[in-house]
Image 1 (cartoon, rainbow, N blue to C red):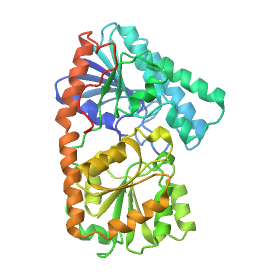
Image 2: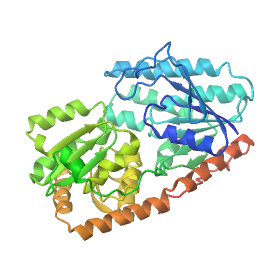
Image 3: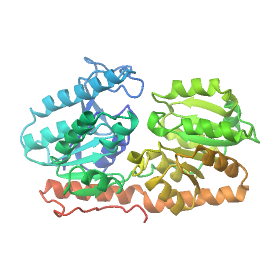
Length: 421
């Protein structure tokens, strides 16, 4: 197939979009990517990229075309301008596509949902089908994060999302809990379930005493790893609160990653005098994450307590499972169900930080064989439920059906891998 892949975020930015494109190329398909100039998460263009630099590129056999956008910066107004500039620039480019230049359009929105707009333009222009992967629930997520109360703004956001969703052929969702939330806005859509898969390099690794030593972590410390974006939605403040409540000198939190909220987190940790409990590593290549998690005794997954996150399955959950690590889940909904079903850790309600503190202490007090059992269960669940071959077989089949102008049934349907329920 000739596949047009549209997303605001792509390599060298670290998103699952990179893997999706790579796997489609590996399977023999011709893929062209329309994306923005990389600037996530720092908010400024990556070195070597710019409005007049490296606008056409290749990535693992795919052609990459970068449209001009405004960098996201560090303020909300700049972020809105960043979103709008991609929609405008990418839509203009898509207006000039030749009819049937591609067999199918596949768009992916980590956030915001407006990323689908240029893909809708492309599909209509070429007369082909379009599958839209919505990785973050809109408008629920921005309403929750921004604590929006203005009914007019909420209605406007909801109406915009409804218009977008009704103009795609198939909604692709990473969690089946997304479906009733989307149905409440735009009923009668077609769905395909496409969770994140574990990476080949997401494998258990032995503890590395030298690495722990470099990070100032002692042999008797109980190290809990966190990997990924550090934003408001990740509810990392709950970890800080729990560490403060637990007041256990053994507990150390290894923070791998970066994000808009990191500086505020470090400032709060310093204010509370908890610096000895936290180690910030910063961003590392994705393939290095298992090395850091391997030197941790357990991992931690937190999300905000708002109802918008009930259906979210963060990619870091698959990372922890694939690396075979015990998981402390301070989450609800789908993520909590997966941890419980896999029997690979402890779960607390995200609105109860005292419960997380109790679980921190409980996990740190487990015997080595009990921790090992949690890790084995995590790895087993990852292989059975989130294997790469199983999931990409499903998405390839869906795109082939769309390219042949075949659609799923009119009624809501979910195909592909199941979430283990």
